[in-house]
Image 1 (tube, rainbow, N blue to C red):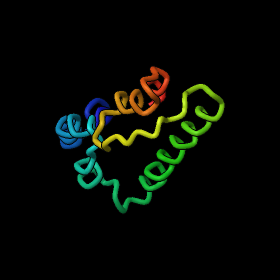
Image 2 (cartoon, rainbow, N blue to C red):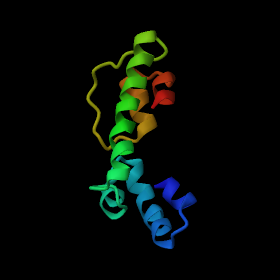
Image 3 (spheres, rainbow, N blue to C red):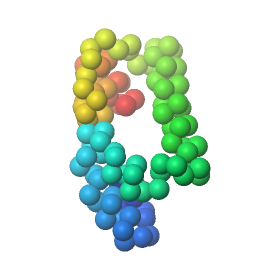
Length: 100
């Protein structure tokens, strides 16, 4: 949402980015997924699938090497803001917040 707002040349996309900033903080991105041509777009399909995969790989390697502590097993709601979620999931470690 922030990239749409800052870097888009289209006025409609800038408006979409502006409207989607607050919901995106809480991991609610349906406005972007279905308004911006992400769903059923073959060009956007590769980053749409590759980004979560790469993020999971970076997280796994960071925990396996010991850069970030393992998660404590606490179940956080999916609407938890990202930095706070990483902090709480790793047992109040600033490294978990930084990774996320």
